[in-house]
Structure formats: structure tokens, C-alpha cells
Length: 371
Image 1 (cartoon, helix red, strand yellow):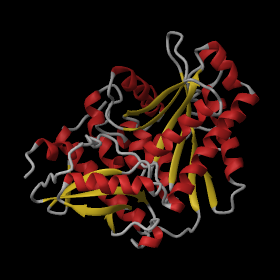
Image 2: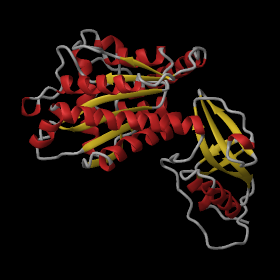
Image 3: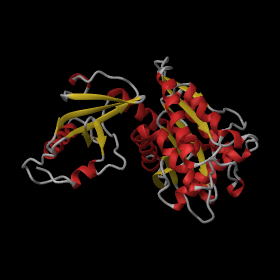
């Protein structure tokens, strides 16, 4: 594969991000909540063939069931990357979601392994944290080799190289908390409602996720290579049940955004080593606030929109709006703000830190000495 220097790759990626986010901000034309459903593989790409089952067929059947259920909601618009057995290039899947200015991108797949591994996994974009996650992403990313012109459109990206994944996290960074929220709802439904084994919410470098400009997840519904799970996923019953669990998670996610309720997640944030001390812990030059919500929709930061919490601050980060309660340089007071927000229903809220109006890593701030 033709390669380019890593620095040039990052510069190109940053430019691409800026252009893409500008286009997204200019195309908000629908009042409906737009969900793009992506059935993995298709056409001459069957996906994995564990125990003789076809990943492309199972993924499509599940996606069609999810879409049918969501289309019953008048305020939800469903768009499919494919509705038949056709091959869709990775870059085209992302382009469909971006052109639609979608609120969510949900890609459905089936897993495979050489041993008796089984269970569901839902991925959000991130650097692989272990070899297994990297291998799952590598398998899905290698679909680009089935495209005749892959060298032109994926120049410098090598699915076999961990280094190529470094830049992929940049695109989805601002949507990570929302992606994790949806992924958690999905996995919770698989375990709580279907009693399936969950292998958890994970991060890995999927190309199709990195190139979308909205919260995005990739669902591995189970292992076709594990005979009982493959048989379940290949059955009408299994496909309908998995689809219903995914659909209900999407609706739950949408309702949370609409109502601005809690259950927001804080990935890679040191979440409050709660102190029993009541005396102030003041950090000069630092503003602590409690993030209570994140949404693609612009909402007035008034108490009546946030269950009586006041003051609420709104900050726009590219196409995403984040909402914060309180403001103080006293970390213990920030923890009290957090406790108050939790009592109002924002169960997943978390403390963040700002310096000179720019967000900084909370754990690094807390390593310094308070006054």
C-alpha cells in the first residue's frame, strides 16, 4: 500500500475534520431525530462465515428489524446504508450518515474467533486498549481491500498498522461520551432483557466510525463461530430479539436527549475521589463545573430546562453543545454541586475542570496542591 508520512497524514486529517464539521453545522434542516442504520458487509463481502452462517445476511436482517420498529415513531427518521445484499464501500457508509446530518450512526456486525468465545460487544471509536480489540477493528477495516480504488481513497491508512489508528480518535472525540452512553444502553438491554452475555463497551479503531460526524457505535451481536450463539443469531427469533433490544436502546438515548436527564458518561476522566473533608480545596486559576448533559441540540441554559438547577452554562464544541452546572475554584464545593445534580436526576454527571476557559484534565489538576 502507498504510504505518506505520519505528520502529513495528521495534517490532512485535521483539515478534513474542519471541513466536515463546517458542512455538518450548515445542514441542520430536519426536525426529526435521524438514525442511520448500517448493516455490515454485503454483496461480494460476506463477512465472517462461522459455522456456515453469513454475517452479511444476519446483520441486514437485524438492521431491517430495527428500522421497521423505529419507523413507527413519527419524530424519528431512519436511513439505511443498504437494504439489500449489495456491497457498500466504507467511505460511502460514513458519507451517507454525514450527508443526512444524522443524530446517530449504528453499525451492526457479527463476531468470529478461533476458540469458543461468545457474547456481545459494542464498540465506540478509540485507540485499541489491547490486542484483542485491535484485531476486531483490523478485521472490519480490512474490508477496504475489497474496493478497487482503495489506495486512492484510503491513502496512508493501513488496517494492519496500529500507528495508522492514532489519528482516528480525533474525529469522534467530541461525541465520545454520547457514543458510550448509547453503547451502554445497548449492552444493558442485551444482558438485562435478553440475558445474553455481554463482553462490555469497548474502544477500538474502526475506520467507519472515525469518519462520521455524530455519535456512532459498532455492535458485534455475537460470535457465529460459537455454535449455540451462531444458531441463535441465524434464527428469526434471535434476530427479532436483538433488533428490539437495539431499537429500545436508541429510543432511550433519544428520550434522554429530549428530556436532558442524567446517565451521561465521562470516559477517561478521573471521576471524583470524593473527600470526606469539608474545608475548602481551592485551586487558583481553575474553574470546576459539573457536566450534566451533552446534546447536538441547542437548549437555553435556564433553570426550567434543567430541573431547577441554576446557574447552567452552555458551551459549544464544534457541532456539540455541553451543559454544565455551577462554577467554583473549590473542588469540595464542586462535589457538592455534583451531589445536588444527582439528586435532581442527573445520575451520570461528573466534575470537569477549566483553565483560561479551556478544559483541562481533572486528574492532572488534582495532582497539584490546593490552597
